[in-house]
Amino acid sequence: MHEFGARAIDGADEARAVAIMNQMQRMRPTTLAHSERVADLAVQVARTVHLPEAQVHAIYWGALMHDVGELHVRRAVLEKPASLAPQEISQIREHTLVGARWLAAVEGLTVLVPFVRWHHERFDGEGYPDARSGQDVPLGVALVGVCDAWDSLTQSRPYREPQPYDDAASELRRCAGRQWSRALVEWTLDCVERSEPVSLD
Image (cartoon, rainbow, N blue to C red; front, top):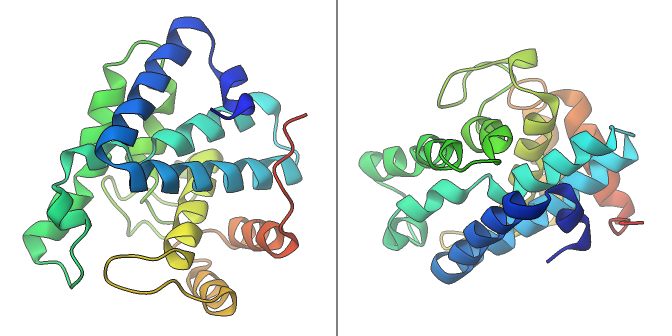
């Protein structure tokens, strides 16, 4: 496990979080790998813009847990190499609600529920599940949402090849001000462009 993450949660809370990650590794290893990449990038961005360390810790663990609700989604749907049917889209969207309910029931990890529930909300209020907008989505949660999108664009998916850097960057900038705040998009792309490793010192 990331040393940084081990310092973010202590004792029994850490053990509970690790147990969830182990379950993800067994059932959805690609989901966990994606979450780890999102967490690393989100930490890099958060550190670059000098967010408080307590907030950086929450962002790290929130990013690791953000897709835990995908354990509820059938593998055939997650790995479908074609367009999804409306009911399959609905099932995938439910991962935010299911994951939030699961994490809310885990003592010590309820602080991470916003990351799970709201990482698909949009700056313009057109996201899901609660149609929150602008400042109604906490900064750290919105940052995880941008990093989630970047990783999704630049990694292989069952239905498409990864996008080259320039195309992915153009997509994020095209949606800035609507799907994500312009500042978060630029912070993220600036970090990606410099490709600095996450510092854990």
